[in-house]
Structures are given as structure tokens and as C-alpha cells.
Image (cartoon, rainbow, N blue to C red; front, side, top):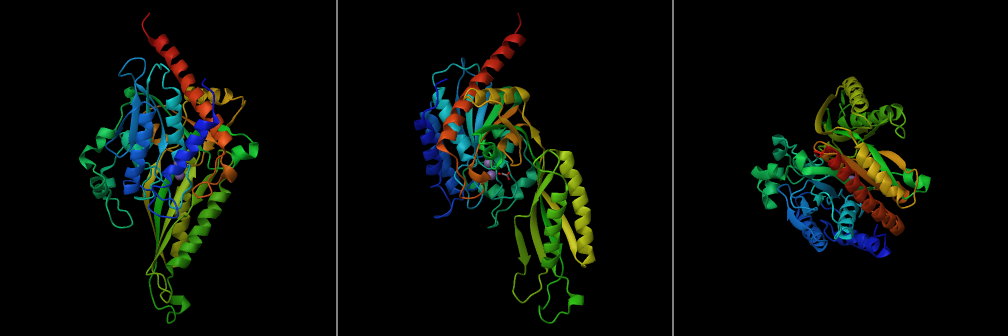
Length: 428
Ligand code: GLV
Ligand code: MN
Ligand code: MN
């Protein structure tokens, strides 16, 4: 172990803040997929990767990548990464911390011979803030790409296809970002917890057992726009009042589904609503809502959606409204691989923190896309008050210090168990 120094943890935090500069807004942080700010962040991150001794490139899906060889060239790679895109009005750490910590770990291991290549990746889109579909960067790397996605549009009507071209990427070559399972040893990601559980235990680090399976929908409640004054109540088909009932019912059903602190509950969020025609003196004729639905396992989530959809349809029908649901995103729950989890737990243990908390991640991560093609493991760092997707996101310098030690030790533990496995499987 090279041991943590506050200087490399301080550098990690400084770099996260340096990335804040690449934002679509002067005041708050917003950096979305394939924008100018994304290109700027990629360039800066590639420079840091190069300083850590990595060969760098931007792949065919806009992810920034770096690689150093293992004890011989061309070996499969252990991948470390997270994402560089943000939600609107974001904090500085969701995603960026994992990328920047990975660079610091690569720097620490600069002169260490490893039984695999070490690759780093800053994913281009995890949040889905621009095109509504999440994990576009990591799904491209996992070789999972749907042709329909090219027609997704951002709020300005720009298609994903056009955004690729504007970014200097060739949409016909997106498959070149895909990695094959035999090229990879596994994927490790460090991330802020984005919840309150580590802080409640007064512990800096934890590990992830599984990542929530998520589905996202566009829900529409369709009524009829009419004069706000002249239409008697009996004749009103107010889509917004219907949507209000829909939203409350979604929350009621999710709350009643079990304890989301344990493994049996579902979590449902309506985060966006748009009303047509959106005038003060017109009864709303249409309301479009987003729904984000998560659970520790896909069966619980899907059963909830089946019940919810029926119930919401009935509610709307009772008000003379039409209910429609269009699925926009689906990611299966992704369990972490036991051998990488052991490495992460050993990494945490090496810092003196014993018996760490294992959490199911309510948040989505690039690791869940990567799980399609390789084993995954995740290290969580405590964040202040569990706040995330908010500018008040905060991590402690001392937590980043032990986080770096644990991450580095996890890579070393992965190397040890990988080498032992190789030895067992090689002919005598
Ligand atoms: C990403 O942060 C998500 O969980 O939605
Ligand atoms: Mn996020
Ligand atoms: Mn994230």
C-alpha cells in the first residue's frame, strides 16, 4: 500500500471542482451528454489520465478512456470508472468523484506490475438528463444499443443522431465502443452513497450488494382543454387534476409496498410534469409526467408497475380522462460479483474499518450496464446528509483519503485473486 496522503485526496476534490467549470449554466452545474461542456470535460480528464501514465482516447460513444498495460501488452483489463454527465443543478461529486478517484488510483499504481491491463473510463451519459434514456455511454460499451435511440430528442428537438454528428462522432460506428467480455477482468466503481445510511452508522465507506432495477415511463393524462370560466364542473375533463391524483396514488402505492430500507420495497418518483396548453384561463387538456420506478429486484418492481398501471387507468377513467404510459428506460437490477465484492470489502478492511455496511444501491450506476458484459463491484463513500442530485452534495476530505486507500487496496486485492485464478486455470 502506498498509503493515503491528504494531498492526493485534496487533488481529487480540487479536480471535481475544476470540472464544475464545464457547465451549460454560469451559476449552477449542468453538463449533459454530447454538449460542448462534455467535450471540454473529456479533454481535461484525458489530460489527467495521461499524467497518470495512461494512453487516452475518446471512444465511439463519447466516453473518455485511458489504458496502461499489465505485465505484458494486450492482457484483459480491469476497468475503473464512473460518469462525467450531471443532472440539472447538480452537485460536484455524483459520477465525477469516481472518475477522478480512479485516476488517482492509477497514479498510485503507476509503477506496480499488474496481472491485467488497467483501464479508466469517464462515461458520457449515465443520468439521461438530455435524451431521457439513461446510461447511453455505458450501454454502448456493453454493446447494448437500440436503433430507436437515434430518434430520441432533447428539449430543443435535437436528435441523438444529430448530437453524435455535432460532437464529431459517427453514429454508424457506435458499435465500435462495445467491449467484449473476454477483454475485461471486471469493473469497479467508486461513488458517493447518495443516501443517509453510512452517515447514520458514522462510517466513511461501504460496499454495494446490488444496484436497483429501474424503469422509467412517460405517463400522459389526456382530457380536454376548455374555457376555465365557462365550463361547468360536470363537463370538465381536467388533465392536471387527474395527474395530481395519479401522482399521489403513485406515492401511496410505493410507500405501501414495503420497507425500501430493506430489500422488499419499491421507490417511485414523479420528477417532471408538463401541462398543455399551460394557460391560466384554460382547463388543462393534457399532462405529461415522468415516472421513475426502482426496487432491489426486478420482480418486485414489475409487479408494482402492473398493479400501478391498472389502478391509474381506473382512476383516470373515473374522471373521463385517458391514461397512457410509454416506457422510456429499463435496466435490470445488477448484483455485484462476490469476488469483486470481497476485494472491495478487503480494500475497506485495509483502512481499519471492519465489518462495513453492504447496501443495495437505490441510485443507478454505469456498473449496472457494465454488468451485461463483466463482473462488477462498487465502493460507496459517505456523503453529507445523504444529499445528492443537488448542489449541496458534499464529501469529507478524510473520507476521500480512506476511500482512495480502499479503492487502491481493492484493485490490489482484485489483482491477487485474479492472478490466483489464472494460476489455477493454467495447464500444469
Ligand atoms: C442516477 O443517478 C439515477 O439513479 O437516476
Ligand atoms: Mn446521478
Ligand atoms: Mn452517479
